Image 1 (cartoon, one colour):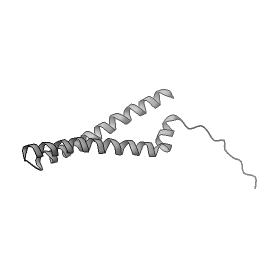
Image 2: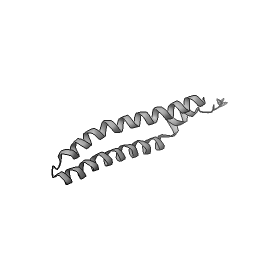
Image 3: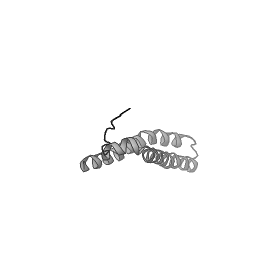
Image 4: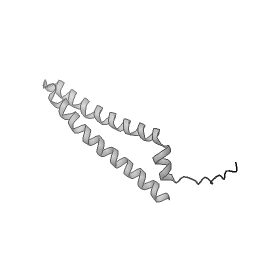
Length: 88
């Protein structure tokens, strides 16, 4: 059996980010989501506690936090992918 091995090519920075950097991406997404929910949900909770309106502002804070977290994640990774693509 004479098998020819194809030469391995170097992965581009974007390929590395997409296929080998999964753990880093996952940790960053989770951190952004938790931080956004904690800030907005926690702020709503504290406001509810001060104004005795529980759970009104906490729910509003959480409803605002979800799309805001998605926007922050999008902007973060757009910046990262743009920086990586410019290096290529």
